[in-house]
Image (cartoon, rainbow over all chains, first blue to last red; front, side):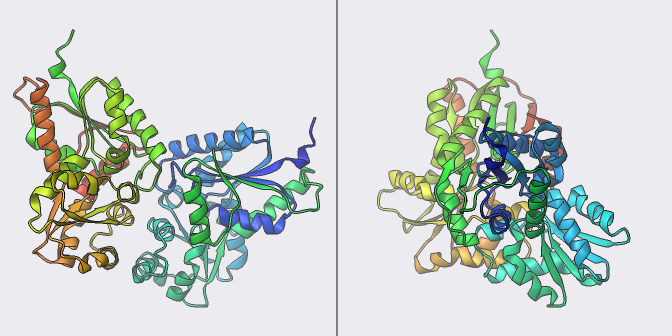
Length: 266
Length: 266
C-alpha cells in the first residue's frame, strides 16, 4: 500500500478564484503535492441554487478523489457554504472550506465588533458567515452585502475601468450607515478589488480574506492527521479544468498574475 | 399515432434571454403549443468553449425531444453558433437557430453596407455572423465586437445605473471609427440595452435583433413541413429550467417584464 502522506491535496473552485487559496497553500506548504480542479464549464456558482451547487461539488470531489488525494479543500465560498457538510459526510478524507477560516479571521481582526461581509448572492442569502462569526464573537454586528457583479468585473479585467469604481461605490453604499471597522471578502475573486474597496471606504477599514487562514487550517489538519508529506523539495502541482485549458491558463496569468504549468482537461 | 402537428415547438436557451425569441414566436403563432427550456444551472454559455456548448446543446435538445416536440428552436446565439449543424444532423425534426435570421435582417437593413455585430466572446470569436451576413451581402463591411459584461449587467438589473452607460461607451468605442449604419444585437439579452446603445451612437443608427426574423422563419418552416397546429385557441406553453424555477420566474418578470405561468424543474 502506498504511503498516504505522499498523496496530494485536492482543491476545487468553480473556476479561477480558488487559485488565491492555492497560492497561500503553496507558500505555507511548498513540499506538498497539490491537484487543482476548476469547474470552468459550469462557472459561475455564485447565483446557482443550493441543490445544484451540492451536486456539482460532489462531482468535483469525486474527480479529485479519483486523482488520489489525502485531503480536500473547497476553495470556493459558495460551494463551502452549501456543500461542505455533505462532502465531509461522503468522503473519507479531511474536508476543509473557506467559510470557517474567514469568519474566525474577521472575528479576530475587528476591534469594535462591526463587520461587513461581501459575497455572491448564494453565499450572502445562505447567511452562513454571520452565523460562524457569531460563534467566535457572540455580540458581533454583521452586515452582509451581495456584490454579484464583482466576479464578472474581475474576470473581464474591468478592475481599472471607471465603471468598476461606480459599481464598488454602489454595492458599498449601505456600509456608510454602520460603524464597520472590518470587511471580510467572502469570495475568492474579491481580493483583486481590494484596492478599490479600500479607496472607497478609507484606510481605517481592515480588509480580510479567507485564503491565508484557510492555509493555516490545512497545515494544522495535515499535522493532526499525520498526513504531512515527507519530501523536502518543491512538489509537483497539477491543474485540471472542465472547459478550455488554454483560456484558464491565460486568465490565471492576466487576471491573477499566476504563471501555471500545463493545465489539463478533466 | 398522434398527429405530429399538435406537438409543441421546443425552444432552448442558456437561461432567460431566449424568452425574447419566445415572445416573438407567441405573437406570430398564438395557437402553437411551445415548450421552453432554460439551462439555468449551467449558464452563461457566452464564454464557454465550442465542445462544452455542443455537449450542453445536445443534452438540452434531448430533454426537449423527450417532451415530444415537432420542431426545435435554438434561441441562444452561442449555441446557434457552435451546435446548430450538429443538432440538425442528430435529430429528425426541423432545427432553427437565431444566427441566420439575424444576419439576413442586418443585410436587408443596412443601406451603406457597414454593419456592426455585438455578441458574447464565443459568438464573436467564432466569426459566424460576418460569414452569414456576407452570404446575403457579399461586399458588406462587418465589425464584430465582444461585449461580455452586457449579460451580467442585464441579469443584475444594472441597466439604469451610470456604470452601464460607461461600459456601453467602452465597448462601442471602436464603432466611432467606422461609418456603421446598422447594429445587429447578436445575443438575446442585448435588446434590454437597446436604448443605451442608441443613446451612445445616435438615432441615425438602426438596431436590429434576431427575434422577430427568427419567428418569421419558424412560421415558414412549419408551413413548409405541414406542421402548423390546427387549433384556434391560445395554446398551452410550458417552461422548464435546470435550476431554481422560482428565481427564473422572478427574473423573467423583473428583467424582461414577462409574467410566466408555472415553471418546472427539468
